[in-house]
Image 1: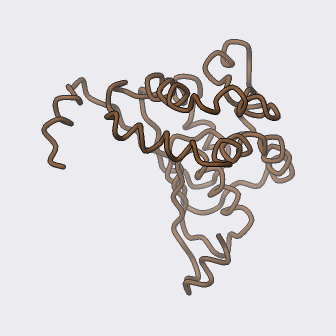
Image 2: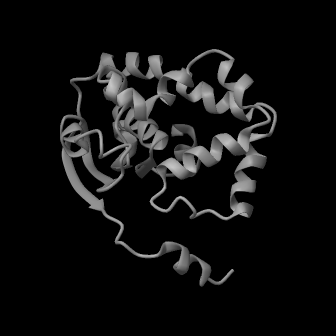
Length: 196
């Protein structure tokens, strides 16, 4: 990322990351503080916090952090069943479980069915212990640029488990907080009237 920033001729960037992107952004903000101006993290709890606070109760919702780290087993169980696997997460994590059309799901199925795609996805989780080790080295070094923290107020997998605001106040010096809550609206109806 740093080489890309330099190649494009920027001295400093505003870095925005969601979920895994926020983990990468946080590491970048700590390692290359001269190259970033601001950081925004969306729906994120650092891997270190997740793995250090994993309890039997939390594991019911965050089981994939452990399962996805197993060597080869996730690929063996999911290969050829990518649609079942993906639809499970879309149902469990979506405000409206029917929000994605069959065509949209098919795009993801096609992508995850490509050779090496599942391995790449699971290797991201398999890097979790290394993420934790890196974060432990500088756990007391807070991100020192303005940091915007956005998290869904009714997102069960993140804010339903963690106090995201408090976590990020322990991760960065200059934390700005935002959240959003979906109103009780018929998203399917709104979606169907959308122009292609």
